[in-house]
Structure formats: structure tokens, C-alpha cells
Length: 83
Image (cartoon, rainbow, N blue to C red; front, top):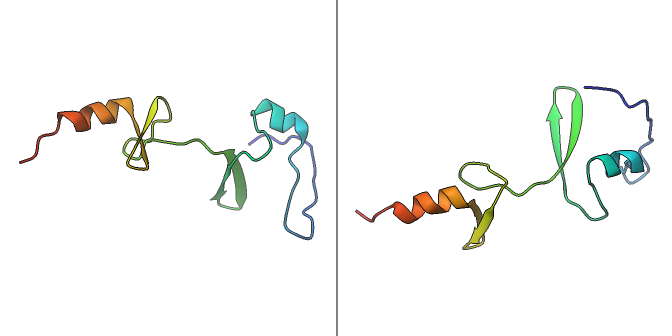
């Protein structure tokens, strides 16, 4: 992990402001959902990306019965036959 040298304080509601330089660099805009991970003693923030519920792919997603699946998985599902 690389340090940015930027320090921010947590406010009384537990919020931290992400610097505009980082928001611009990662394409984060107001109201974007963020994922929060813990890795050992580190807290990691990542811009949320929707993923296929089967393979995790985030490209060419299709909504099917309120679930997101990619085109490849949809194609595979289409080839399944009831036994």
C-alpha cells in the first residue's frame, strides 16, 4: 500500500472526507456506493461495482428476476435442460 501523505480526522459521526484528488482519480462522485473491507489492521474503501452473482464478472450485466448475471452465464443457463 502506498501512502498519500494526506491526513483526515474522523468527525463526531464517524465520517472521513475523501480528498477531491482521490475522488477524481478513482471516479468517485457524490452518492456513489462504497464497499468497506478489513485486511488485518487496515480498512480498505473501494468504489462498489455490481457483479455477476455466479462468476463475479462486472462487465455486460443483465438483470434477471432482480439478480445480476453476465452474458456468458446467461448463455450457459439458457443451454441447461430440465431433467
